Amino acid sequence: METKKQFYPIKFTPIPSRRPWGGDSLIKVLGKSFVETDEDGNEVHLTTDVRIGESWEVADMGAQESVVEGGWLSGNTLEELMETYLDRIVGEHVFEWYGLQFPLLIKFLDINDKLSVQVHPDDQLAQERYDSLGKAEIWYVMDAKPGSSVYMGFNREVTPQEFYDRCHNGTVEEILNVIHPKKGDAIYIKPGTVHAADGGLLIAEIQESSDMTFRLYDWGREFNPATARKMHLDEAIDVIDYSLYDDSLWTRGPLWGDGGEKRNQVRQLVRCDQFTVNQINLSDPVKATTSASGSFLIYICVEGEFSVQVHDGGQMTDTVVRKGETVLIPADMPDFFLVPRDRDTIVLESTVEKRAEVEEYPEESSEE
Image 1 (cartoon, helix red, strand yellow):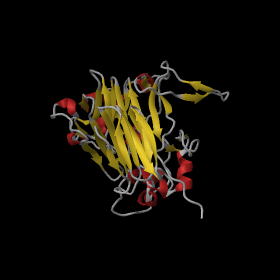
Image 2 (cartoon, rainbow, N blue to C red):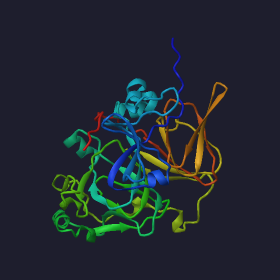
Image 3 (spheres, one colour):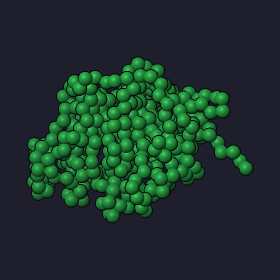
Image 4 (tube, rainbow, N blue to C red):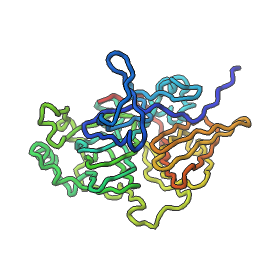
């Protein structure tokens, strides 16, 4: 009988995504090295002259597939890993629910200009109408320039007609709830929450594997033929939550003066059916395992630097994860240690926990 090969931490090659609201922070601040293929099949290294809004770190999105970087799985796409190793990658309960669809999409966002006012559907509506996953997500603020803003929900209860009219007459900003975030804040964006952002934000985003985004208002760009993008206001009018924004979905970080961070402190940022995200202030080595959740783990380094150390058969592998990098821990991997290489290391830990009941669910998510 052939012995199963041992899994180790998996890193992927980042995928750049150009956006009109993007900037140069993904290259300048996070040190990303982006490569695209031109029409002639040549590799082109992107520079800071290109407005890059997103870096897709872990993606199983059909046309956008993460490719393993290094190790014995090097060159394989995430889709190929799912097809070949099934629940060894994600865990049995995740595989039962999502099938061959990897459930999470991990990104970094550089919001340098106005991000469109948008909304995402929940799982039920997305499944019924589009045979897709919905889109719950969480934003972790890695940096926020003075004057930056996040528009999250409404500052009062509104009606669908009022919102519709304001999107057409350019006054929608008057009813949007405004947050001026600080570094270390986290904002859970429930499906149905109208949101946007502006003014210099570097964000780590964890979301469902779905590209179900409805643009509602694009700050006037939609009225200029040179900048117009497809809008979805009519399609999304019954997707929106029109109530007053629930401020408890905004988790304030240490810069708001809550007494500071503790050594190896673990703070739960969100726990929902779609994912659980914890913030770890990593000051000393910590032993970790996938057995607690029975699922994969994803670690995102948002400050400092750490390594994932795996001891197996008398040997040790040491995978270094720097600020702006992401690593996937397969469900079928031995216990391991998170070891800080910088005294101010902060790590986001993401996983998908077991749901109360297992039902049939779409195996693939459709792109917008």
